[in-house]
Length: 137
Image 1 (cartoon, rainbow, N blue to C red):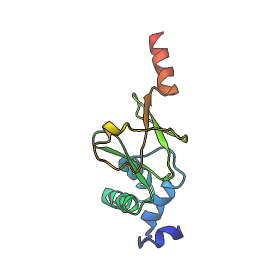
Image 2 (spheres, helix red, strand yellow):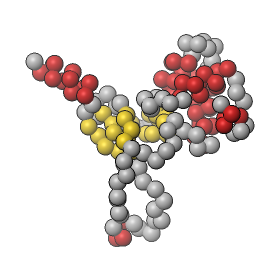
Image 3 (tube, helix red, strand yellow):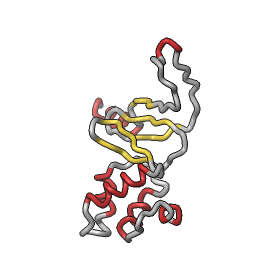
Image 4 (tube, rainbow, N blue to C red):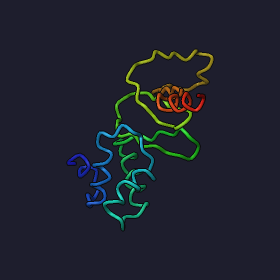
């Protein structure tokens, strides 16, 4: 938690609970999901506290924002370079830790200086495939 103090983030019990929930979380939760979970312990906490904490962490480079649906932000505490696999049905997000050699043809660069890339793969997760199989029977 010391790394958060260095950011100038006041470590209230509510914020500590948000940080604890995010620590090692691989579910890529939305602000709403974090609020629902953390507000069980702190019922008087506002959604704004969760959202503002997430925005501060994002600005400071402590978490990444993943946008898979229009207007629905997911937050990823894993800031190491990685890619995502997204279920087209339930929107579950899984991490992919692999490098892909993606060379953009010179004719398509349009004057951009490429500084990074992120790949999203879409598919149907095992749970959704299992449900679909049961429904077909």
